[in-house]
Length: 127
Image (cartoon, rainbow, N blue to C red; front, top):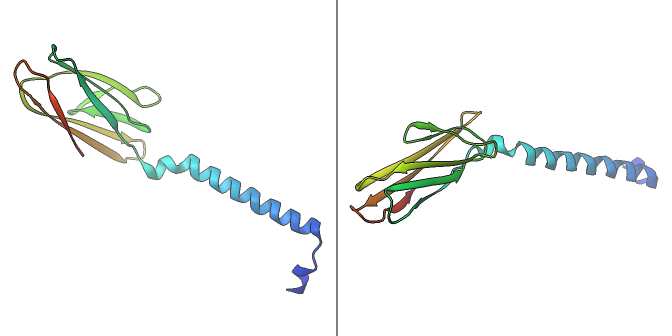
């Protein structure tokens, strides 16, 4: 213990510099690798004009390499953005988005939609 107390200031500065460097590298590595344990998340909305039976689903699924809408693959860009047009039939419908990342982690988002004939659809988010 006396040996550590008797070290000069250069030794302490060197030790503290190494500890700080390893702490910075650890935090940086954690931030860059967090996508592995966070997995994929889906953020989506459904938009529909009152005079059209078509609805537009827009969203983002960062870290996803595969995404499907009701079992049909849809395309995403490098940032994970997607846009898809679907036809809304009168009555009750369920729209399901499923995404998978390259590590096999998956996420699902469901929208329950009720549309009366010649009326605007109402979408209910069901996680």
